[in-house]
Picture 1 (cartoon, rainbow, N blue to C red):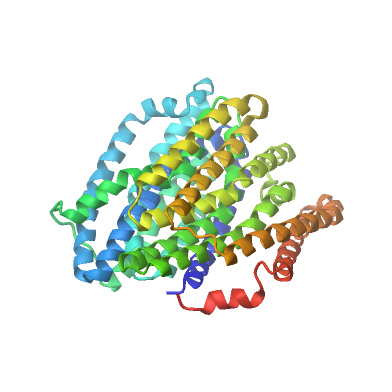
Picture 2 (cartoon, rainbow, N blue to C red):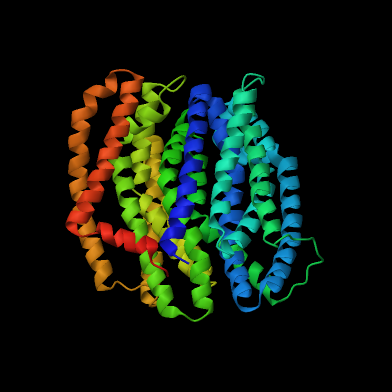
Length: 515
C-alpha cells in the first residue's frame, strides 16, 4: 500500500471536513462571539471530545488497530471479526455506564471541571445544559472509531476519512435550521454535535456491512487478544490524548481568566487544528496499519523506511503551515472570524493566541508520527511517560504565564509541552534503533531550514505589500489574504525545489511508488 497516496487520500477528505468545520466556527463567532454562551459551548464540546481523544480515537486505534490488523494478516478475516465482536460488546457496555454516570452527576462535575465558572452563573448554567446534549456524542463516535479501525485495516481509507465531513455537514444543517427557534443558538450547535455523531456512525457502519465486517453482540471471552487489548488500552488513552489533555488543562486554568479567554483559545485552536488534522491525523491514520503489518511480518527494514518517509513528508507539509500561522495570524483570523459579534479586539486576542499555539504545531505532528511507531509495536507505556513529562511542563508554565499573558501564556505552555513530548519520543526511538538519521534525512533537515528561512522573508515582504488592501472592505480583505497564502505556498514549493529539500520529481516518485 502506498503510504504517501494513503496520507493524501485521508488528508484530502480531512481538508473538506475542516472547511465545513470552519463554516461552523464562523457561524459560532457570528452568532455567539466570545461571550459567556460561547465559552460554555466550548466546554460542552471539549468534554465529549476529551473522552473521544482519550478512549475512542487515540486509545482505541492504538490498541485495536495493531491487534486487528495483525490477526487479519496472520489468521484471516473470520478470526479478526470474532475479536472485533467481543470488543464491541464490552465497549458498548462501558460507554453506556460512562454516559449514565456523567449525565446524572453533571451538575456536580461541571463546577469541578471549570471552577472559574462559579463566578459567572450564566456560563455555568449553559455549560451544564449544552453538555447534557453533547455528551452522548461519545457513544456514537466510539462506535464510528471501531468500524473505522476495521475499514482502515483493509485500506478503505476514503470511506473513513470522509465521515467527519458528513458529520460537519450535519452540524451546519441543524444550526441553520434551528438557531432562531431556541432561546440561545448554543442549543442548536449542541444538538448539531449530537446528530454529527449519529451520522458518522452510519457513514462507516453501512460500508462495513458491505465488506463483510458486520458485527454482532456476543458473550465476550477474555482470550489473549482481548486481554492484550485492555492491557494496552489504559496507557494508550493517556499517551495518545496528550494534546487534548493539555488543551483541557488550559481551559480549566483559563476559567479563572476574564470572559472570552476560553473562546480565544478555542478559535485559535480551531485554526491550528486544520494542519494538525490534515497532516498529523492523516499520517498517523495511514501509518499505523501499514507499520503494524510490516512489524508483525518481521519486515524491520521496510518499517524503518516507512517511518522515515512519513517523517520527511509530514515535516515537508507541516513547516510551511507553521510559518503561515505564525506570520500571517492576524490577517488569517480577520478573514475567517471577524464579522457579526466577533470584533477587531477579538481578532487581535485570537491572533496572538494562535501564534503561541502554532509554535508547537511541528511537535504535535511529530507526536502523531512517533506514537504510531510505538503503538504498532504495542508499546503504549513509553508514550505515557513522555506525555506525563509534557503535562507537567504545561501545568507549570500555564500557572507561571497566565498572570501576565492570560490565554496567550496558556497557549505557549501547551506548545512547549508538545515539544517536550515530541523530543522525548524521538530520542527514545533513536536510542532503541527504530529511528535512523541517515544521510538523506540529514540533508532534508538542513535544506528545509534554508527553505523555511527564505519563506519567512517572502511572507513578510508579501504581507507588507498587501497590508493596505486589508482595510478596503471585507471582499478585498478576503481576496488579499487568500492571495497572500497562495503566493506564500507557491514560494515555499519553489524554494524547496531550488534548495533541494524536496524536488518536484521526488514528490511525484513518493506519491506513485509502491511501499
